[in-house]
Image (cartoon, rainbow, N blue to C red; front, side, top):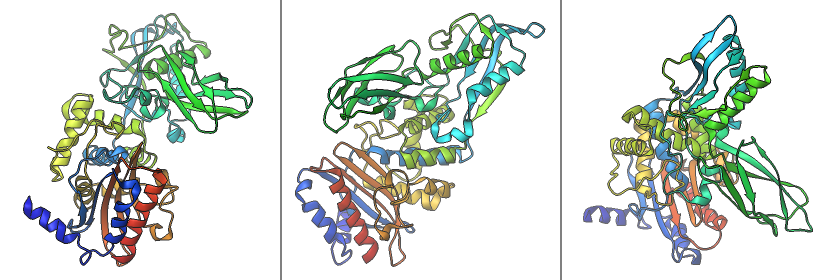
Length: 478
């Protein structure tokens, strides 16, 4: 250990790496007085560390945690991996009369993207397609109900240590064996410029049997709203403030029971097509007696390839997709669709990449938990492993946001020096800003980097600007 520290000190001297001047200036800024920083740059070809500052200091990684999840998923499942949602029925179908004495079953297969706006061209109107296929099967009357089989994963949608204020928002939506519409809904509200009163206009999609208590107020021009809602609940409330205006305002919230919603929407669609259904919708969680044993398959809906899902996951930083992939890894490699099983697989993958996981803390797959603990050294080692030994590095590399162009980097790293050069995953939470990825210097060196900043003062924009300047100087001088 002592020898390692000496090497790091030697490598970080100005004579070896002159551009640390900009980084030193960054560290000495008043906004960094109480901040914690971990920073590593390495040769992406050889893996040799060029510069390191607190390389083993564990910090909150925020969404750079998605690099671990997405790399493990693409390597272990493969870029052409797909999820399948099956529509079928149980019971007896009298094909002469068209009467089904039994239930229509939506059997979830863990698809995180079913009905997602990100993949609208892929799924189109899948509910209409399902209804049409059910009619083609000769079903005209159902003495039973539509049941969502959501047993593919466990019944713990949200990570136990997520914040309550996050779980009700769209970015904190839970993971279900049957997910739909990114497990999010749009709550439309309206305020007026001469009053603090906020009126709740609509919820899309409509959540049958669910009630929101509206405690929102209009104040100033800053949004500071919260949706307090937990999985499988029947009511929640809106709190905080929205900007004062005379127009409508949309709040993106999580859906408390996506499997039940999917079953309800299909049942309504079937009824609108003239199919009579005698009983109310349910799910296997609510009614385990509705066994899917001897399911007679009517049709299947197949997801986009995993490579496309991961591209959205990393570019748009979709927490839901990352959490789905954690449980899918557990399902495939431990026969258990749980978070714990998936995290075990993530740790095994990192160990296989030559990363010591004994000092790391992995609480989820998205980085939403503030209890995650990673360091820049482990992220850089992972990036180098993927570049040099990963079977599907092109797909992984393509999934990373491009500086100044798309995803979470669309408004950052816009200086021409980063153009078509830097690809990186960002991570942000309150007082947390992290980046990890790849770039090429003007002298032709391919580098991998990770910089993690926690507990800074001042604005996040100021911190990001300083990080941009540090990387820009490296690109120009090295």
